[in-house]
Every structure is written in structure tokens, then in C-alpha cells.
Length: 75
Ligand code: SF4
Image (cartoon, rainbow, N blue to C red; front, side, top):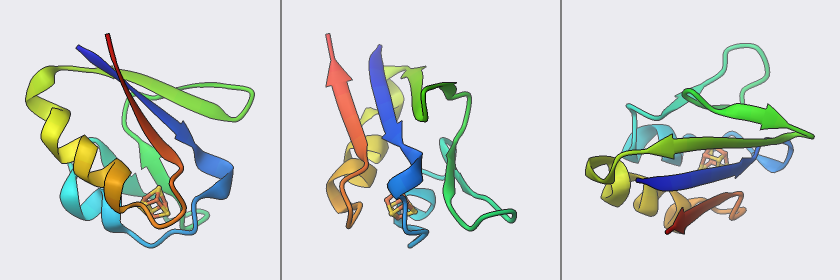
């Protein structure tokens, strides 16, 4: 397992994460930002646990996010 951390307020809605990891990221029709699927929010920061078979796609999302608001934590 690994952890995805997402600072949603700073998302600029480019859509890259939803393109490279569509099972974990969806673009919101309400505010145009990305939503972390199964993310739990605390003080504006979203976290989700994910299985390693999602790692490469989410690492690509984090690397390619132009404002670097996606972080990946491995334990
Ligand atoms: S890649 Fe980053 S800026 Fe683009 S939609 Fe995803 S979280 Fe937002």
C-alpha cells in the first residue's frame, strides 16, 4: 500500500491526473478541479490509501501535475 496526498485548493484543473490515472482521479463538474477517488479530507488536504498496482499511474500523476499538488508516500 501507499498513500496519496492531495492539496485540492491549489489544483488548476488541467486534467492530467485524470488522464494518466483515471481510476483514482476524476474532474469535478462543479468547480473544475480534480477529485481524489475515496480521498478523505482533513483541513483541505485529501488522503487515500491505494494498492501497489495503482502506484505507477499515480506516480505519473504526481510527477506530471504542473502545480505539484499530488504527493505519493511509500512506507
Ligand atoms: S494534474 Fe494537478 S493541476 Fe492538473 S487536474 Fe490534476 S491535481 Fe489538478
